[in-house]
Image (tube, rainbow, N blue to C red):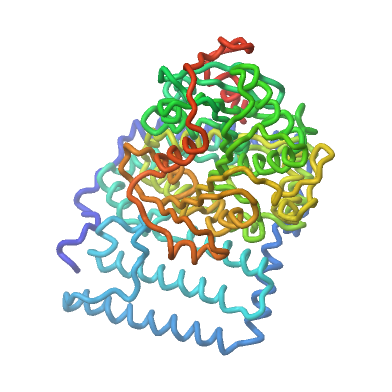
Length: 606
């Protein structure tokens, strides 16, 4: 065996404290009984579950279709199996050489450089764990290759097979299990198993949080208070209706741009992703650049708002905000930003306004926004007729989609980072979650009104009606995105797993006005909330807008650091006029309460 390995030293193992063990097991017994009783009570209240043979996600059907396609071309399957066993034999031989002769050997397979599951050196220095790691990676590659080998598979079925094969492969990682994770074994030896006792307590706590369903804690929630430690940019709520509160922020400069700035965040998440803490707050930075910033803070809806439609969100959101801004500042012309779904709503509003000759929005910025949903990325896995019917049945019963269900869907898109890493740290290592503002926001989920969410998923994701002229009608007006002529700025992110940048780029080919497209490094959140002071990431920009996104990227220029200054130069160029700074509450709209308002503080579990 390698003398320098990091495998646990049996002599280092100590027995757990008997008193701690006794207290823990007594607590486990009491809490377990209560959790099970509460869970069964909730199940009875929710009504009978679906028949055991039901498959609303059509996973089984997709895999059966894949199997049938594979059987029609057995040579391909045999080829994949032969390659797998050949690599496996080489791994056996290499491991034997390391054990018996100590020879250094090249790995048969290596994990991706971004894969943090195997960062501990014991995965490479210890022969046994190195074998386990490479054996898993070979099996994972084999499963993935087989899933891709079926000929003429329906694209939707192929996407579903690929997605759930990766979910299966990720779940089986040896890093997720006590006996095959060297870090966990070392910790267990060092603490006498107390890490596992703490992990069991953490597991019970998470089951209690989820009322019988596992709700993994990603961060230490006690360290964050909305309006106290995060979302602390000064301002006031100056308007509200049943769907939203409008926040006007206190100026930080003596002069401000004449045009106010309206930010429309998605209602799938809360607005304070743009105002986490002062160092990474886009809202605070925009205020410091001389913008009079207004932000829509959407309500966290309950069953009373079940009938609120996408049309309501347009009329009671951007339209109501424009009216309120005119009252608060005396200005009708504004610059507008829409983030993700908020950007989709902004595009609908602009098309609606174009038909009505309403020109109040003078420039539009789209953060990670899809207008054409033809290639909507992995979220499409969850959107087919069977799943939509199942989802609608749930929403009709409650009047809304539970926030936890939406959060789980997004977490599955990055299961290793947002699920399994916390399983290992919380339950196997027995560690308390680290305080992280972004993960606190991620866990602060929101509900979706039934009528609005069903319309959005069906008409946009499933049927892609938004890009069809007249395909969607809101408030009696058929929408045509090609009629939008205002200057537009598209900001997308290169590693976006929710709105793939190749899909968001399609929007540049739809609108009729001047367009600038900028691509930031990192993902859907980190790439957007990347302040200039961080010195992190980079962004790409190019003046030409060819039809193909790949062609655009080849001609784009990479710039170091944040895209925020590029956007500031662009938006100021639209209108440089300035006026004395405006204080919230000094206009025709009195201040209702301090920012960030009360709507954002309503939790989905309340």
